Image (cartoon, rainbow, N blue to C red; front, side, top):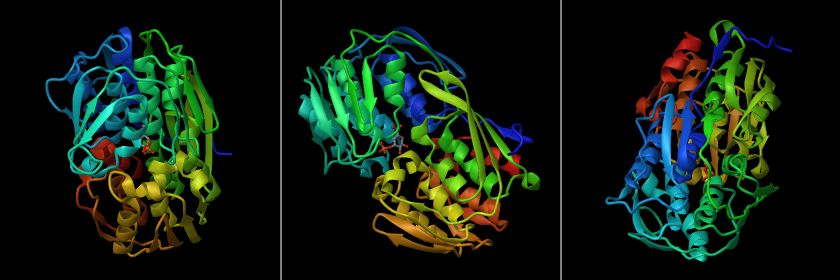
Length: 424
Ligand code: S3P
């Protein structure tokens, strides 16, 4: 066992998924909600901006935020296009919310978001009665005409919390029962938050269903730290990169089991990883994760493991260069439609720094260990790629130069200073 209080402790910023949902639920509630420790990152600013354009007064994102919600279904028609920036969560969750409102709106995004698939969210909402028009293909820009929706019992071919949440939010706003079945359970923050606010919501295996609520009450939330951001620091600790090879404590982290796949994989790779729940926040378990370094071995990740670590797979692939044996990630073709094609980009970058990596249609292979890696990599405007290669650079002791280090602001604005603090 490692000492519960490791010499280094980091509280990474607030969870991105929970921050988006807290803002959206506050904007749908009747009355004043209070959100503490929201993540003030570019993606969350996008959700705040979209909600402001729909008539909700949201102050500048700070540690202690009050939002006056107009009530369910009471957003105002926007006077401009709604800019979702780089944020898939903003675009897809707001598509659900807007489908329940009887006005037309237009969603736009940056170049990366405008390449990402939107049909997956439009199709179920069309089945509920919303109408969609795309400028080209099935990507943003996209116009939505919402209104009176009917109930749906939707089966999704992909495990996607964004699609599931869009349907649940559309049902909530339109006050109709909905149910969504997905092949593998995706992160369940929407279900937990709505459940904590008294909405009748059932979640079993890959199925989530919601019964209509007359209104959403205002609420208070202290947003826990993001396990996806904590994962980068945990990887540094597992690889022995914390000053003096020390263990690391990650405090106040959201310990939702649908988000902990990376930490389970890290344990399987041989690192010492413990977590303990200390409190509950809006239905989310919250606590401390402690990680200590050990010799790492290769790991196999298959489709069933993927949703609980979807955002951490680029990082896992980077860490696999330091593990003994062949790591294989399969059943992860969703990675190709994230902020970048994360399979192609990770493999190209790993090769560029001298690692032994191979691209597969639905994943990748990495053979390790190759401890001394260096060179230049491309972030493709993708925050998680920049941070994964930042961690690899910190561990390998040689320079890994990232073309666009500032893109980390999408989810973890203070990443580079936190990394320097624990490794210097
Ligand atoms: C998210 C769901 C996931 C994840 C994304 C955030 C959410 O996307 O990759 O970073 O907050 O619901 P998918 O639903 O597309 O898998």
